Image (cartoon, rainbow, N blue to C red):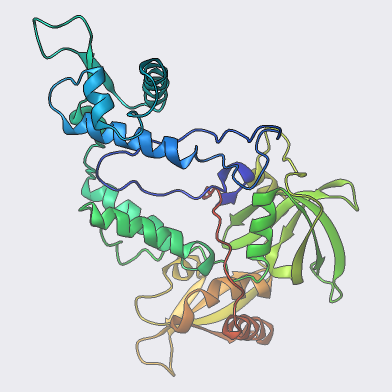
Length: 377
């Protein structure tokens, strides 16, 4: 899973029903540069114009016959004031804006006799969104993808998307019992890194390298956040070392602090974050951990196990041997299974799991409200 600036935009699943016209840019007040002033808003025009456009759409949707210009002037609030010439100019601008917004404005006449001036209407069949129809396997895939996000930062967005699908009559199917989709983001530094990538801001943080007990301060221009084999990484340009670097989030100590203005960091063109992490984050197993698994749980760990046996202390549980290179990474994986997995040995792996659980028990900061772009390896 990859987060880059171009992907960090919240997405919503459209609900069933007629589309709504979007609005253009708000004109700036006289004497001010574009976008200046508290009323500037790139998502909307003035309230008066927005209301008039909506009323025009509603009026043309509500009729089955073509309405003449004067009928429209009488029916749509906002057109009744001013001279005939001013109304004509306003109506022409509104027609062009509706067409630019993709609203299907039809022109024709309802009378074979008086056809000198065309009328207008909006065909509901062309305006409304089509029904959302998913095959059973597509609905199951959606449900499986939503359950990937079990952590606070993005769980709300996936939950809202599923609710919208259900409101439209789509029921995401259940995932097969042998699949346990997990993309956990329990690292305290995750939200800070994600926000920095989204905003294009440099960050500073303390980082503990492998084999070192003392963290050092790092200054990084972040390019993206990547999930690779169950572990999260920040990829970016290390300004102290003048080179691209990959940082594992579980090794960050303390708070990730943004520095500098937003938008100052722009990732290089053609950047392949996943390939960078794959080159720099390869660890060969150097130790073996013994993990007890509850019946029906831990399928990923079972597949990787070099051996397995019945747990003598827990009825129906299984003890598996798992190769690992780093206790912290093993703890990241095992903690995601909650009470369904227990590390029995070695001591350093058990201690890493205990640290994770204690960290999860601490109060969490408020989640980041903006979204991000994703892609899974």
